[in-house]
Amino acid sequence: MTRKLIFIIIANLFIALVLVQTYLRPFRDMILSGAEQKTRPEITSFRDATTGKFQGAVEKWLKQNIGFRGYFVKTDNQINYSIFNEFSRSHPRKIILGKQKQLFEEAYIDTYNRLCVSPESALEKKATSIKKLQGLLGRKKVQFLLILTPSKASVYPEYIPEKYILRTNLQKKDNYQRILPYLEKYGVNLLDGRAYFLDLKKRGVPDLFPSSGTHWSLYGGYVFAGALIERMERLLGRHLVRIGSDRDVISGEPIELDKDIARLGNILFTRSLFTEYRYPVTRPDTGNNAYRPNVLLVGSSFCWNILYYLDINNICSKINFYYYFNTDYSYPNKKRSPIRKEEINWDRELLARDLVIIEINESQIDEAGFGFIEKCLQGMGY
Image 1: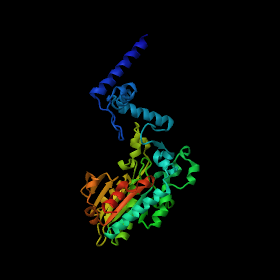
Image 2: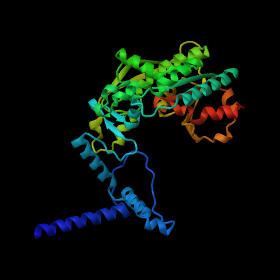
Image 3: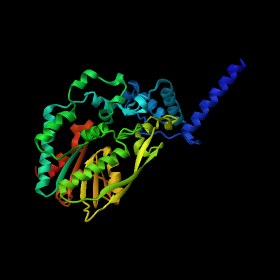
């Protein structure tokens, strides 16, 4: 009887403590990583209550706002990881633990498994639109380059757990393989990151993707930035600033860009996911009469690691990065502003540029430009 009483008292004290934390927040909670859309339970009609819609909203609100939520979520995730070698499947960006501590996002494995294949007609139409944009810019003396960035799943498929691979599907071509002939057919200026990284891997270049990240590593971004500068020189016919490096620093602690998936795992001991990371110490190699171009870059989160090296080595006089064609990040002043697409003066935006670059990851081929290509052609009278 005494044991039961002690248990009841402790349980009620615990519930009371959680309620106090829920409404008053006297204690600091653990911070969870990742974006989450906050909900607020509201009844807009009597039907909301009778159908269970309101009750569901209340339940979701409680899950998001309960006291000590960070501790509860991370403890649950840690138990899952430690015992079952799995991450929470409720996270919107499903995380897969691969071999040798390599982490993957499920969406990229789906692309590797050819689960997101677009019709040939749609891919050819995308290639022709890109070619139209390249031709339009060329007539205005502005160079154009399309960058296809690689996926961790396609560069390091050997680390994907076998149970997640659909071997029969791999006989089909993915969107990357299917659009390449059209880009070649229409003469699109292309820097193929997947082919480049697979060649680097074959030659034994390590650390192109971090174990704890979904994007290419900062080291991979550095290597690719060098190839990009060489390609820019050929397009512009001018000598540019190069990125020099005398040594690499090997670290057991990744910088933010190299641990994006590990943070999203939201476990108690995130450091257990870290391996070894390579960081080059760089410097600008200006040479004689190096030119710094004015560049417009349109792309995804894969651009951050390239921009890091272009910025710190002062490669360009100006860069505007249209992030998913929603937000404009300008360099070197590092300003951020929303893009008002209907207000863009396309002549003013493009004619001062030396080069327009569109980056698209191989997992998002059908979204190339994120609407920029179509808006630009429309705004220029096409």
